[in-house]
Each structure stands twice: as structure tokens, then as C-alpha cells.
Length: 350
Image (tube, rainbow, N blue to C red):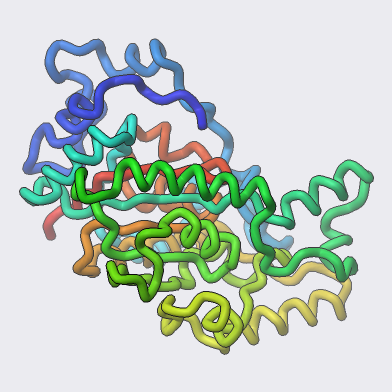
């Protein structure tokens, strides 16, 4: 993980809660606490997270779809209907707790109990999966990935984790064990996972004390909005059937995921092979819509400590554009495989 601001969690929280009647706390206001150095100076002193243009990790649009050159440009080019839809999404500030450790977890739990914040959202990206290694080997052989997706029957479909991915999930598990326990009182009440196996397995390995059907009775829900791409832009993103997933992962609620969706994905796969070309892929406006819809769903849930297991492109859209991320630069940085971030979230009152 990239270097983070090395300020104490107490100072970080005090910055977030400054101006309790406001959600949109400005960078200037956040950096003016206790005679601390200006925010920009602090960032320069401790090093910024490496910023990466969103286009490099987001699904590419088909030729007949406008190439938005990143989500920021996509927002600029929204239609009036799309702008209206985005304006109707909940307004929420999400401040990353840096560093997220046992002490910070106790403080977060305290402010959560007095309702200074609405929710704690623990976002994780899945560990390394088999298709990543498969694609890496293809690149070393100089092969065309798009052609391999179309014609290589060995290309992993809805793959599981590699050994390295399992190790990354266990690393997250140690973080959860240290920060989410009876001592800190920051206990997950709901776990929401992507339909893709790599995200679900990462969450299951990361939360051994909060498994579905365990004595803690933590709720587990599969939410289709969290998938990598809504129509399977590659074999790795093609969702398995609800029947198969329910058998593999008993106790997870798959009621939001419909077999019709999976049928459409499979039909797209068949069409792709028949035509010898990629079908129209999800564009960036669609990705934003999925992230925004999840924020609305999240706001209406009664649970307050929520774990979210998803994928790089979705997490970029959610952290970078659906919520007002604090600090802003951190929300734009792609999640690494096996990365966990803790967000303190406040929703603006309507």
C-alpha cells in the first residue's frame, strides 16, 4: 500500500468532525485544526499516494460509445437526464481513517455510538485471482489478450484466488482481528459482496469470526452493483449462476442477483464467440450509475458498520465520484489487490 499521512487517528477524526453541521468540509477547514501545517504542506511532507488516471483500469467503451477519457470527463459530458440522476443521489462525505489501527477503531466506534457519523464502511478489494496470473503469462508470451478472451477455452471464468491472493486475504483478516473485536466495539453488522467469486472468497477469508450462519449472525448479502462490470467484459467477469453460488457459499443472501442477469451474460459470451468480436461493453456512465445506486442502497440500510468487498474499477468510481472522499486525492487512487480502507461516512440531511 502507498504511504499515507502519518497524523494520529485522533487528529484525523477531529479534522473530519470539525463543523459538525456540515458534510462538505473543505480541505482548508480540515487543515486548520490546532495550528497544524496547511493540508497541502502535510501531504507533501509525508508523500502523496501515487495518482493514476482512471482510464487505465476502467472498462473501455465500444467504438459506438463516446470515449470519455476517464470518469471526470464522463461526468462533464453527461446528458441532462444523467446529470439529474446524479444530483438525486445521496450527498455523503467519506473520510478515510489514517492510519486504521486498534486505537483508531476504538475512536471510530465511540463517535459512531454518539451518532457523530452515520456509518463506518470498510472497503476491500479482492486478493490476486487466477485470471491475473493467466493474463500475465499471456503478455510474456506476446499474445493478444482480446483474442485470447474470445478463443482460449482455458481463460479463467469467474476465477478464484491464487495462493498469493489467499495470503492477501489472510493479511486483511489480521487487520480485522486487530480492529474489529469486543475491545474496540467496532463489529461488522453487514457484509456486502460482489457476485464474483474472487471478491466473495476474499471476504470470507478476511472475516472468519463473522461468517454466514455463524453464532454472531452477521448478515451477508450479494449485491450485483458491486461486480467488476455489469455485462461481463471478459470471461473473468462473467457471473456464475445463482444456484452454483448459493451452493458454494451457503448463508449469503443472493436474492438481489437474478438468474436472468446471468443468462444475459452467458448470451453475451456466446454472441462474442459467434461474431468473433467484443460486444458493447459497459461505459463509464453505467459504472457511475451502479456506484451511485449502491450509495443510495447503503444509506437506507439500518446497519452502521458495513464491509464491502468489490473490485478496482467499482471502488474507484465509488470512492472517487459517488462520495465526497476526504482527502480527495486518496479517493482517486486505485485500490491494490488485497487492500482494505476504513471510511467514516456522514450523509447530508435532506
